[in-house]
Amino acid sequence: MCGIVGFIGPRDAAPYLIEGLRRLEYRGYDSAGIATLEDGELRITKAAGRLDNLVQLLAESPSPGHTGIGHTRWATHGPANDVNAHPHLGRGNAVAVVHNGVIENFRNLKSRLEAEGCQFRSATDTEVIAHLVATCLDEQLSLASAKLDESDGEDGWIEPEYRPLVAAVQQAVAQLQGTYGLAVVFRDYPEVIIAARLGSPLVVGVGDDAHIIASDASPLAGHTEQIVYLADHQIALVTADSLRVIDRDQGRIQHQVNVLDLPPDAASLDGFPHYMLKEIFEQPETIRNAMRGRLSLDEATAVFGGLNLTPQQLRSVNRILLTACGTSWHAALVGEYIIEEIAQIPVEVEYASELRYRNPPLESNTLLFAITQSGETADTLAALREMKRKGHPTLAICNVVGSSIAQAADGGIYLHAGPEIGVASTKAFTSQCTVMAMLALYFGRMRNVGFEAGLKIIENLQKLPELVTRALETNDVCRQLAGKYCHCTNFLYLGRQFNFPTALEGALKLKEISYIHAEGYPAAEMKHGPIALVDEHTPTVIIIPQGAVYDKVMSNLEEIKARGGPVIAIVCEGDTRVADVADDVIEVPHIDDFLQPILSIIPLQLLAYHIAVLRGCDVDKPRNLAKSVTVE
Image (tube, rainbow, N blue to C red):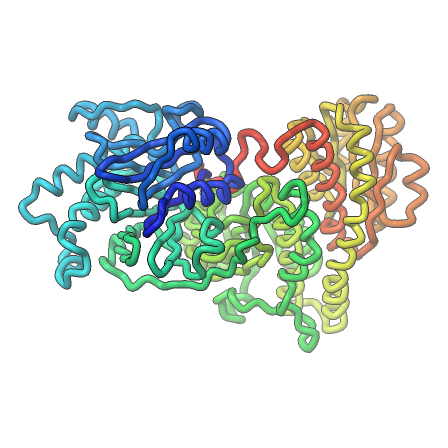
């Protein structure tokens, strides 16, 4: 949930570390720090709060050195303060460690290490790793000849002086239970960084005379076009001019160098005041990217090249299980409605955090889709692995190439939405919904959807980018309504059928970034409890486009107005009937019911954004939240 960056090369590391940490701010954090090496000394600088606090400290007391590691921490063990911020030092200040993830057995390890003389300064689980690596290094250095496995050491691919370092990290991580992404530097070996991962992402950027380690690809943009994705149970030995990778089971492996498809300006604001607003306005293009090359007019179907399952396997699927968390779970709910409507395949949607611990009865021909923006969500990854362990085929729908979930699944579909930096997901949601619609077409054409019906679905999909552009024209209306309602402390969001998930997502956006309590419900369920909340101070946002349940939702709207509740209605263009009853209306274009959520969510995203701005909230980095939830 936090960020790691490391640099080793011919230039001072600190500027690269700070730049990298800035690019990782979107992941969520509450403290930051760096460690650099120079003249046999580890220099640690860290501070609670925003990264600017660390920058100020470095301006007053620079931290030179060509090797360094940096970190943004999201607190899991111990409060957010200077002491608990990373990096952490091991016994004798011989090593410094930054860590993402959670060590579940840290208390037992800490008790043992304290009995051996280690003195702990922080309340974190990470400091256990630092002391453990330092202790293991002492043991390795005391051996007459420190060795790796025979397959690792025979050909001399690791210099003898570095073998104790690698062996120490191997020995230490073998004792850890939980998840980790680690970067370790050694006081007496300033020319080396060692990285290791299990369940928490790490990548290495490969340059001509420098290497960069990071939690994801964003810190690499503009510095290198080559990237190596580390897998679980792998350790990387990194110097300025070399990268060597060791697998726990295979020993030394030939790592694959990939091309980094991320422009240097991918993280720029492009004139927008916040990343969230920029990403809202990118949605016509990101939806277009999600569909690019995937709609076949000749076959009247969708085409996916990465599913890695045979047509026979796919035709035999008689149940689909969608699992996700947060916004991706709402996209999964949209997918449930669309796939069942079009493809007539039973679909279940499960919170990944629940599925990983449940043992639901599933038919043998059940296909799992794990839906995630980051591809690193710990609960989703665990749920996918559990279903895979039980023999079910698993596919991923994610946005990040080379992510843990993309690697763990049998195949999958990339969103191609580009980096999503705002913590509150916007463009990933609409891209996921678009992919859900294409999957419904794909499975439908295998079963029950005729050629002409398939072409009509494609025609509707192809209209989406233009219609989303028109929906974005509601920005000014949403800004005005934000001024009217930003003082409210409770909101209700109502929708039916395909737009029930839209109501959930709209409520989530508001609570995430404005800290206003908001709840989403199926519109007809309002009278079974939530209607008790309706009063003149509680606005209801009701999604009521033209469609099969229009009259039913209209009745729900009338029930709210009868009790004095203010209503903001999301309607199709030209709808005068709702305008006569609702206090405020926001018009979006009309499209077939199954795609309406992609249009209806646009003004809800904009409304949440403008309310949060007026309330003075940190829109891109809301309190307590992290972009990539890599801990349970």
